Image (cartoon, rainbow, N blue to C red; front, side):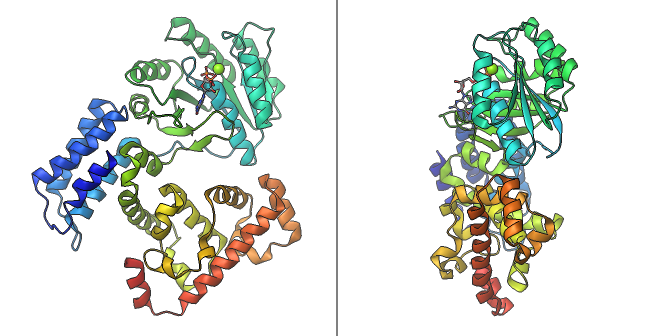
Length: 439
Ligand code: GDP
Ligand code: MG
């Protein structure tokens, strides 16, 4: 599917004007992808109309080809469709999970606890499911694997009492994640129970957990949970399967919320924060990742110039800090598999990549994830000036981030190597640089 969208877009190559037929064909390809990813028909139609209207009415900015113009519109409308990620502050809070049985709540509770612990916060999972036999053992085991605090009571049948006692028993924890029971279908007693638990734990945020394969059922569930406890975000689980999770977008619209986390497997580490770009690529099919990533990159450069004092070109002019490196890694992470975006890194685009020594950017995605966690444990001063990081600081950072000291040192090495490589380019004139970056 993705490749046919690419085909339609490629037909626009060289055209400066776009006609209705071109737009129609592109929109049809997008519709096909989205519908097969379970995105609700109404949402698909709305997106289609927006793309059509904008593509035909808006003047491409000077020098922009018809193809680039349409791609930019498609990307912007897709971002609008999937929304931004739910804001999850890294601070003490209580989060409650709701959803039907089997949607992945218990698994998500342990995963989120693991995620918070990697961010340096102390989490606890409180298991209030007294409905499903084995719920206690399952939650307990997963929390053991995640090495996070767990509270449950297999001998107590009142979930509200467990919730209340659990909050007290885990009062030392900074982040409380409250897992709840589900049912096979929406039933009044489930809603009553979850409302009472909500009253007992007063969550800062309630998340609706949905299986990626959810279709039409998303709407009713979202409405019901929104009306009873108020939904601040959606978690989509089982994205490692064939389902693409488009049905969950209905729940997002229905609750006026956003997607927070994605579940991508059965182990506690298989959790990702939602990122619009990756999700869009998933919905449209990987075939279009590259073209989209190009648009994404440009869009990101624009936003970065607007609302951030980070400018990729500064790297070429002055110092290359760890913050710069982190920004580059974030940019790469947002855009998907490394090999596909290697030559699209802001500020290092196009031909420049070919001129870098092979090992200068040789960081695997796993490593990048570790680096990211490590950098989150560093002070601003250390990020600005990594040279001050000596043995003692390495030890502290390793402890804070839960990473090996060797990996911290490796990060510092990597930074040095990138910095050295970039220095070689700094001697060039601005014109050369611009030409290379445009390529
Ligand atoms: P709950 O009833 O909502 O608490 O759902 P569970 O957390 O017990 O999950 C139901 C089933 O889905 C279990 O077998 C989980 O291992 C599985 N599961 C949950 N999340 C994921 C995921 O992201 N990927 C895969 N492959 N399986 C998942
Ligand atoms: Mg459960």
